[in-house]
Length: 329
Image (cartoon, rainbow, N blue to C red; front, side):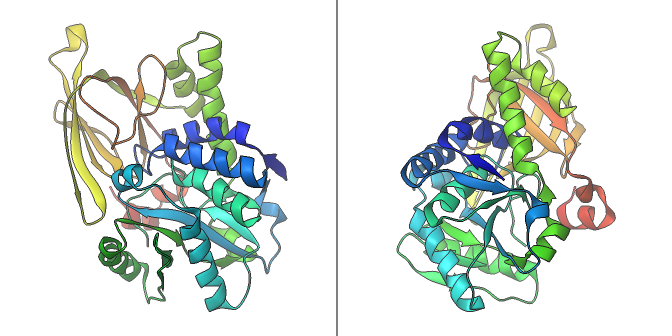
């Protein structure tokens, strides 16, 4: 068990934005909320998956909805507290451990905020190993309205969720797929929050040492540089509770004739260079500021930014037959 304090959140949020593959919400918002909660309510014990007891009730938490909504409508901790209480009432027992649903800029850090607020440990692991635009739950909006879904298939949960989000103001606090300690050991990606912190520390250390943070991160991740250039066009729309759009990059200097199109639905899903696909889900992509290595999310990308687009491997489970059937390309 390790204690996570407010001072650790900077690196975790930075790494989470890398693994979020352009999605999962704004890391600056998540970091500020988490730091505030940790300073108010104290540090969060982060536990290894091997320390889970068989009958522990492990509850993943997440903010659901379009990331652009979260920028203007700040998440309230009471949304998560209300959703957690609704699940505990339905199951007739208290949660033992919280878990991140996905590794991304907002939800990874918000999980620390919720854990600090309710006084529960957080598992060093998540369910996805990146961000994805769909859920496959209990919801609580900012007015305290709660909805508990008990569906025959995850696809139904996803469809019902999108219908509800409009009436809930575009976003809601959610707890998903409560599970036992035994089940969590089967499905969680162990050590994923530590990986987020290490990725963030890699960027911060390179900046401190006056080294190129993009190169340092590429080496740490075993990543590949897909394109380097300037953002010249962004088309986006928020429909069905999700951000949809395309970002266009043009190469620098002698590479000015080259074009890269990055298509996203909350997350970066496919990259094409001069008409050829160079990366696609379920592998990950990160758009980094060429000078600082700062990850740029889909809702923050804008004309004029100078970026390096990198690609790196997803968790091995997404490359299995079942993973491809569920998540893409």
